[in-house]
Length: 280
Ligand SMILES: Nc1ncnc2c1ncn2[C@@H]1O[C@H](COP(=O)(O)OP(=O)(O)OP(=O)(O)O)[C@@H](O)[C@H]1O
Ligand SMILES: [Mg+2]
Figure (cartoon, rainbow, N blue to C red):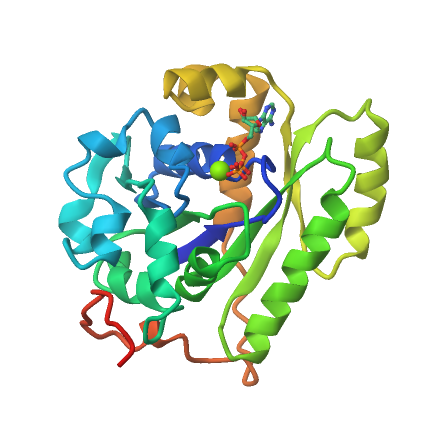
């Protein structure tokens, strides 16, 4: 069964794109077929994987605009066992267009319906806001992974706001769980780390065990378009991502919950036309 995970935090620079690409590579290395979906108009994830939207045969914008199906739009094997649906700067315009569409929150879920089953994991990198593209990612996802920058004094408040948004969506019967809070940019010597580390357990969300250390190598990896897990596989950062991949992949106890919210229309396997349709 595929696990679709949105990587989200409306705070800029929390490490969403860094976590998306390095976790994808670590999952791929562990033999899990993984699709990365770059839903951020900044398309940092695409660049971090060494690609340019201009070179991709199609991008996520083409999929939203109905100019391509998701499958032929994919860039295959951007890393071992990792495929990519490339981002596109035009997604900023697409988001504006979405506002007036029917079922505007379900476009991504419907566009990926046929594609998702081919993968063990689908990781969706979200933009740094809680706008329609992020909500599309939440509707498409089963779980949300929340990177927290442990050098950001305001990170607690940001995470709390995000968790409130997720709770609101659940009340609207969108079935999306919080996979966990991921401590990123970890430097245990800093006061900010200690303060945040003491406060995070108060939030109503699991705190993941794996922690991603602060390393300047992430910046160089971004510049070169080669994820750090590939660039420096023996380093502590790569090890941390392998630990994260293992932790996420660890089979979870199957506890049937009769009250669990159902729906999310994508779960009814159906072929649908993701082309934008103007509200009459
Ligand atoms: N663990 C880390 N150690 C050092 N630098 C990091 C770490 N994680 C991320 N960075 C750096 O912080 C910057 C922001 O990271 P990233 O782009 O992944 O954040 P983001 O949440 O995706 O940002 P945005 O909100 O703009 O999409 C990048 O320059 C990245 O290299
Ligand atoms: Mg990003």
